[in-house]
Length: 216
Ligand code: ADP
Ligand code: ADP
Ligand code: ZN
Image 1 (tube, rainbow, N blue to C red):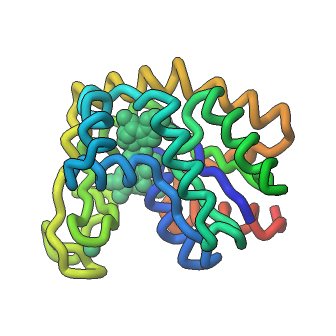
Image 2 (cartoon, rainbow, N blue to C red):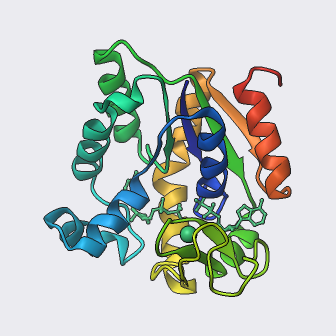
C-alpha cells in the first residue's frame, strides 16, 4: 500500500502517520524529519536545507526529490510506504510518478487532512517534539503525562525553531501557493480522499484506517 498524507502544516500528518505506520507495518517517510536530522548532524544536505527551512520556505525541488528517490529505492519500501510532507509541489508530484512507474509502482491513496487556518497557528505554536524518538505532542491538545517528557521513551521535548508565529505565516503562504494546487492534481487522478482533521486524534485515525482498508 503506497500512501501520501497531504494537508497544511499542523494538520496532523505526522501524528496520524506515526499511528498508521505502526498498524500497517510500512515505513514512514517524512521529508521534514529527513531535513531536521541532516540539519542537526550538520551534513552538507543539512547546511543547504537550513537556509530554506529556517525561513519557512520550501527546500528546492531537486534537493528534495533526490532524498525521496534514494529512500524509495530501499528494500523496506517494496511492501508499501507512507509519504508525509512529500510531494509539496507539482514538480515533486510529477517526479514521484516517474520514480514509481520506473519500478512498476504507483500511488494507491492520497489522504488530505483539512483544518481551518485559524486553528493551525494554535496547533503549530503549541507543538512539542521528542528529541530522542520524534514523537509529537501539544501543550494543550495532546499533552504528555509529565510536562516536557516523552511518554514513549522518556526523552525531552523541544519546540521546533520554525514553529513560531512569524515562520508559520510564511509556511502557510508557501502551502497555499505551491502545495494546495496538488489537490486538483490528485483529485483528477481519482485518488484524493478528504478527512476532517479537526476531529479528535483517535477519530481521525479511525477514518483514515477505514479509507485505507476500503471500507469508507
Ligand atoms: P510540517 O509538519 O509543519 O508540515 P515538515 O516537518 O513537513 O512541516 O517540514 C518542515 C520544513 O521542511 C518545511 O517548512 C520545508 O522547509 C521543508 N520541507 C519538508 N518537506 C518538503 C518538501 N516536500 N519540499 C520542500 N521542502 C520541504
Ligand atoms: P503536521 O505533521 O501536519 O504538521 P502534526 O501531526 O505535527 O502536524 O500536528 C501539529 C500539532 O497539532 C501537534 O502539536 C499535534 O500534537 C497536534 N494535533 C495533531 N492532530 C490533532 C488533533 N486531531 N486534535 C488536536 N491536536 C492535534
Ligand atoms: Zn520519545
